[in-house]
Length: 339
Image 1 (spheres, one colour):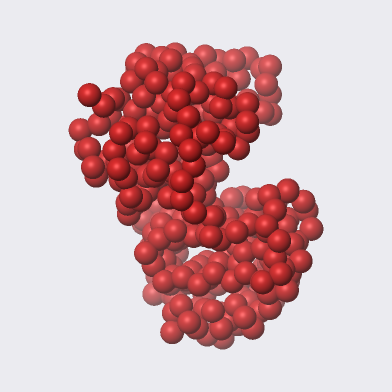
Image 2 (cartoon, rainbow, N blue to C red; image 1 turned 45 degrees about the vertical axis):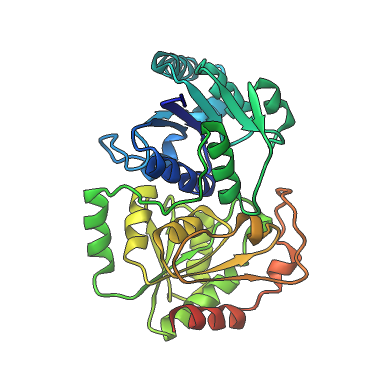
């Protein structure tokens, strides 16, 4: 008999959580009677559950406050946070734990659950993680979404194909976004990236905002805080063509549900737009879209220079191939996507 209580460990980041969701959605569709819980960073919890803790794909989430742990590893707050999580995971008595992250930290989190079986990739991101698994699975599939479905399927003994994802709604966020957007044709510019090599120059985002304004769009640059330097630089470069929108993940989700288009790089907002079926143009450089590209059923166009070199080194300078993508190419891609 297969395990009925399953714990997913995929703490972050936003795009990685979204790329794990189609596998869990497929499991929920195949075997709805299973209890499927998830360990996640609080910042991304709204992708899985609403403010009251109710999820569509998962039953509940356990919050791993990794940002606090890294900032103050020896503080009383960190020790209490870790203690709460360890107790909560052990009390649930999961029969199966699946590490979909593949780092030493995520493997340790999985071990805290003391589940009946602990499964992970044979070649995790950090090799030391594999030593903590009870069983390993060979990586299969080109895209990480396909790999995640293969991993979870092998762990559960069920053949899984990635399934469409439905994200939770927040009433307050939906009302806020409806008032913000109104009747405007909004294009969200997701200008920030996890590291500099993946970030298209802010000056070009500014020029792109001017082009979008001329095409009838209202360009909005999303930002997690008012002091966001990248968003501010894009606004300045746009000469007032774009406006900044400060919101959390729930707000961004609601905004994107009302957006006509997103233009961005390999970043969480781009993957969120793809999951929601929002038309998008994605700008790729050091990361390979075959493996890490946006995944969804909506219209999309991915631009990547033929000379880009795949690398996950977190350098600050924009990757040379990404730097060669011109505003005119992005404008042409927008026309292809939205007509």
